[in-house]
Amino acid sequence: MSCIINYKNNKLLYIIMMMKVRYGPKYNRYLDIELNVTSFNLESKELFVESIYKAEERWISRTKHISTNKFMQENAFMWIKIPVRYSYTLPEILGYGFKIHHATEDYIMTIKSANGNIRSLNIPSYDTHYIRIECIVLNENNEILMVQELYDTKNQWKLVTGTLDAGEYIVDGAKREIKEETGVITSFGSLLGIGNRLRTRFGKDELLIGCIMYKNTNFPYELKIQESELKSCKWVDNKTALEIGNDMTKYWVSLYNTEISRKSNYVVTGDIRGIPHKMHLYPR
Image (cartoon, rainbow, N blue to C red; front, side, top):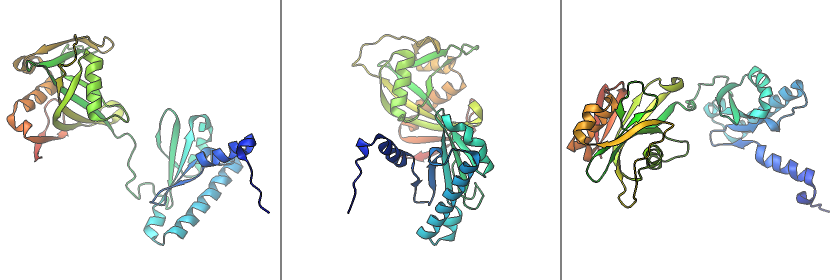
């Protein structure tokens, strides 16, 4: 005789079932397991640590069952995701041998390897780079759009630049930054170059992506600065851009001015401080 439980008619059982679906263990092809801290026994510190121990035992047993490859078994990772409201569990998790991998405003992610060496495989760090777009914006007169930042005490003129948002494509980010800062609607022209700067904000590296953008003539517009970020903006000719622009602007405009930049992709290497250390040319 079989018995079918209607979970939706039993609110408590339905909630329990959905919690297991949402917070149950997740596995990947590397034999890793990801657990939410809410899947453990939180009644006391002792029971909490004991439930971590049991979960780890089940995970190690599972890895041995799935793969006979010793390297994969020893280099698998156990991840515990801690929602911010459960951050009080962090001391016990760290005390058990986990390390903090990264944190957001919503959760803390911790990690522990089967062999105790967190760097036994190339687990990437979290948020190692900012992605910054540098835009040469051209109008129908081939003039370049230049801006002055509000917080720049030197009152330098520069290209429209900005940081890419999470989950945003380069083209969309470039269009957004230009419209937000100046009111100009643009279309994407081409990639101009890629560079990097080391140890910028919060000690993170910065990936720079130069883009050529064109003012969209199908949309009427007037220059309207984003007062929270800019002092001023204006269109200038190419020669003036090189004269009044900061070092980075002069570099990108000079690169744009070379005919070869329209035929190939430039990849800038080295720590850019004004002018890059060196430049490599890769054919398309």
